[in-house]
Image (spheres, helix red, strand yellow):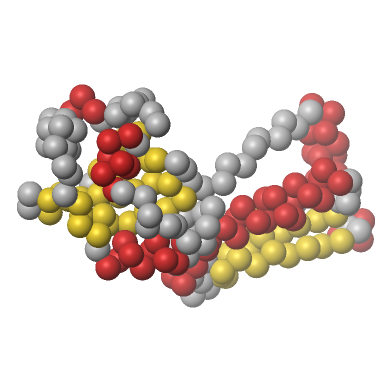
Length: 189
């Protein structure tokens, strides 16, 4: 286990006794938090006092947030007690891929040539639903369904095609977002 408030940027701003560093912390679980944990497959066996004592406090606009074992827990003060508002797993991190100068030059040349649609080998249009339902928080590894879609587009479609050589400079991709209306996010790249 780590030390209390390890790497915390917020620890200096609070009374440690207030958070129960030397006494039992009273944290009430809310129905909302219970439901989110169930949707996200987060086990409740973990004692929230352990989260507060040994987790790392991170910035949060909605109360106090503690990260412990790759899960972020949001707590709010409710009278003399604390209540758990929600929790979510740490989002998957996408690694940045460096683009060589040579590849960038080839891309710019291809972009100019691809203005002539007869040169296109393929044209893939990815339509992403950005309506309110995509903000549901029931997906492991992402804060919500929409985040999971972007991760999937990046890893399962774009990165896989680039790394495997399955896409060439004449393969065109467009991304359209769709809520009440459609919006072109990326056009013929």
